[in-house]
Image (cartoon, rainbow, N blue to C red; front, top):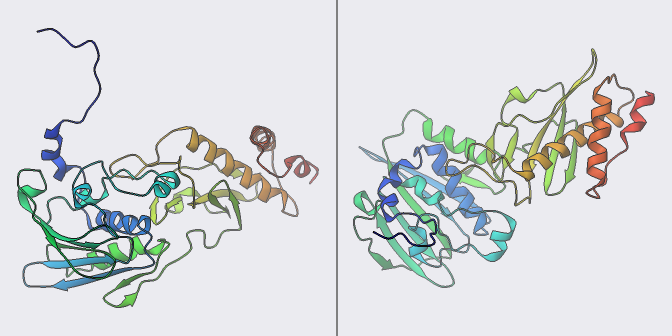
Amino acid sequence: MPFPATLRARVSPEAITKVTRIFNGTLGDIFNELFQNARRAGATCVEVIAEHIEDACIVTVTDDGAGIADPADLVSLGQSDWSEACRTREDPAGMGFFSLAGLETVVRSVSAHAAFALTISGDAWTGEADIAVLPWEGPRGTSIAFHVPPQRDGTLERCLESAARHFPLPVTFNGEELKRVDFLAGAHRIVEREGYRLGVYRNRTSSAGDTVNFHGVTLRHVLPQVKEIRHAQWSVHVDLVDARDLVLVLPARKEIYHNAALTRLETLCRAAIYETIRAEPFHRLSHALDQGQSVLRRLSRFDCPVADVDAVSGA
């Protein structure tokens, strides 16, 4: 059989039959993904309701965002109908909805272009059965209800509280607003630069928990630290605001993809630490001072306004 002269990579249609194994399907993953979709859709708030029945728990997540323009995009792995503005700000992958794969799910959505309801269960998730699309009337936004096993041990509440804790929008659960906390609470100093909020901490190491916040999805990444001789140890946590090129490894989104944006972020973190040390009454730096000068020299080539760490050397 003759081979073609050229080829192009593609995704086999058979891949959809394995979609139930792309995500672990944990409640934490589901809430994180649905919350991110609501945020990207321009929602101002998210409402979660849990109804416990005899053999299941029905969880409904509702937002007042722009709604879904095309139901086909919703069930097309890797495809989405996000606006050009959203695509410019970040890198939506069109996979998050499939965190629900395998669960009986009902979607109702009203947008400027469509108003529909559909139910996905069993073979419909793997492309082996049709999904009926029905008309729907309701307020603008999207409501997604899914069935999970009975949740009477507090797992649902803990997962929901965790997903809402650093999420930028208010979230209510059964009518009560959940507590939100600034991811950089307790920082010695906060530096805003290139789409990041960099919180510099004194004597708080990266082992103290997650160090990076992607709009509410938090994870632990080892970021630069500086240790003064017999004195303070400085570390950084990062709150992402608007930095499209820093992306997460798909589909799980539990680690940062190693690219030039991550290298740049690490450089910015070092500079933030040295700027903070410069503002202190005194310091006890050794060889780290030379490293700090090198960091700031590299930053200057990008026209990034940073403090001159040479001023620290006289302390």
